[in-house]
Image (cartoon, rainbow, N blue to C red; front, side, top):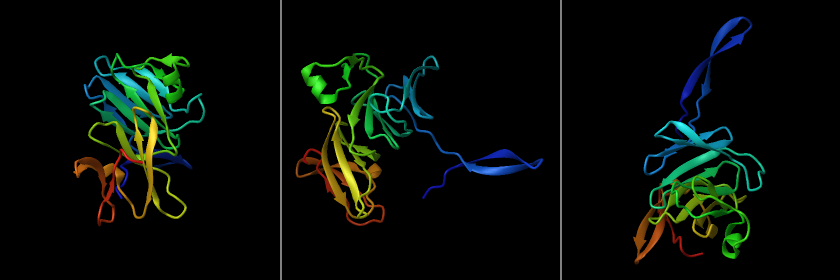
Length: 218
């Protein structure tokens, strides 16, 4: 396992200055595909800055729908095809897709029901989070070639099997769930062609035959 970088700080102890090493944990940060917007994790928030001016334009508290809970950004991913950035969190069971397209469609926080029925009050689609409800927080994200399907590792089961989940970002719903043995590295997964269909190929950390998942089938 890779070690975290270290920083040194001076600590006062009974009148003597001692050098103490503490882990320096990297905060996720990515640029949008056009280089205009920088997304950075801060304590309990996701900050969006304009790289042309150096000014922050959004500070999005990492809280659930309705302002519930609090969490930290775990991963950030740039999706060039969709002109967006995806964020997932350590304890919040939501995935956020944030569009950098000024003409992005309005966001209905009632999810699919409100979108179809035209209910609720919409948020502007530009630089606001479009939330997907998750069964559990995700980690180790990978995307298919369209960037509409996202694979991730969910919470492990009590029988030590690892749960793999696939979500579809357009409908904001889970497509499939699969519990597997071993330690699949979903962050290293890649889309591959099998019999004319695109599958995720997921390597195992300990080596051996990879796992294959068709993202478009339950």
